[in-house]
Amino acid sequence: MNYYLLGYPVGHSVSPAMHNAAFKELGLPHIYSLLETEPEKLGETVQRLRENKFGGANVTTPHKIEIIKHMDTLAPSAKRIGAVNTIENRGGQLIGHNTDVIGGIKALTLKYGELTESRVVLLGAGGAARALAQELAPKVSELVILNRSPDKADKLARILPGNTVGAGLGEQQVVKTADIVINATSVGMTPNTSESPIDAQYLRQGQLVYDIVYNPIKTKLMQDAEKAGAETLGGLWMLVYQGVESFKIWTDQEPTAETMYNAALRVLEDWH
Ligand SMILES: NC(=O)c1ccc[n+]([C@@H]2O[C@H](COP(=O)([O-])OP(=O)(O)OC[C@H]3O[C@@H](n4cnc5c(N)ncnc54)[C@H](OP(=O)(O)O)[C@@H]3O)[C@@H](O)[C@H]2O)c1
Image 1 (cartoon, rainbow, N blue to C red):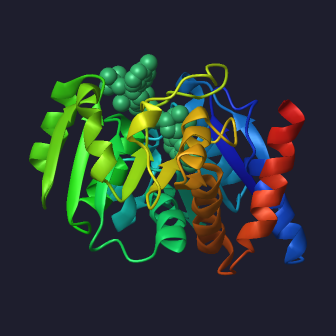
Image 2 (cartoon, rainbow, N blue to C red; image 1 turned 180 degrees about the horizontal axis):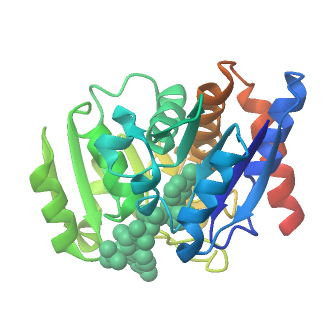
C-alpha cells in the first residue's frame, strides 16, 4: 500500500523516515512518500489517490482545512478541531481524522503524568495553540494563554471552559508559578534559534517546559529551562505521537515511538 504526505511545500519533512522505519520494523510492505500538492490541485490529487486505492495520507500546511471538503466523512477528532491531518481510506471511503492534538497531549502526559492538578501557561494563539488549548482547558486546574497579540489570547480564552484566561506576552511573570509551560509559538524555530518567547528569569526547578517547536531539537527556551533546573520536552515527541496515532488508524498496529523518533532525529541531524 502507498501512504503519502500532502502539503506545499513538503521538501523538509521527517514523516517519510518516521513511517518507513515503523513499516520496516513491523514487516509491513508499505511505502510512505512525499506528495507535493499545490493548493489548486488538491481536489484532483485526492481523486487520483482514490482511483489508485491508496492506503492513507497525512495532510499538512496549507491543506489541513481545505481538505475537509474532499472527505466523505470526519472522525470526531477532526470535527472538534476543524482540521484534518490524517486521511483513512476505509474501503474507498475517505475519513478525515486529526491526530496532532492527541499526539501533543500524549507526549505531555507520558512525561508529566496526570494533568488534572496542573497550572499551565500556554504561549501562542495560532493554529497549534488553539487546538492544544481546547484539549487542555477542561482538563487542567488553571490555563493561562499568553500571546503576542493579546486580543487573540483573550478571545480564545473566553470561548474555552474551565479556569482559563488570556493575556499578552508582557504578562509572562505568571510563568514563575506554572507547573507546565508550553511554547506553541514559532519563536525559536530555525533560523531564529537564538530567540526565546520567555525571559529565562521566570523559569524554575520543578517545572516542565514543553516546546512544540522541533527544529532545532533543543530550542533556546529548552536550554534556558535546563539551566534553571526545569524538566524539558521537545516538539519532536509531539510529531512522533501524532505519527503513531496516524499509523494505528491506517494499520491497526502499534508502532514503536522510539523507532519513529530515532528515524526523525537522524533526518533532522542530517539537515544541520
Ligand atoms: N511538534 C509538532 O508536531 C508541531 C505541530 C504543529 C505546530 N508545531 C510548531 O508550532 C509552531 C506554531 O505553529 P502554528 O501552526 O500554530 O502557527 P501559526 O498559526 O502561524 O501561529 C503562530 C503563533 O506564533 C506567534 N508568533 C509568531 N512570531 C512571533 C514573534 N516573533 N513573537 C511572539 N510570538 C510570535 C503568533 O502570535 P500572533 O498571534 O501575535 O501573530 C501565533 O501565536 C510552529 O513553530 C510549528 O512548527 C509543531
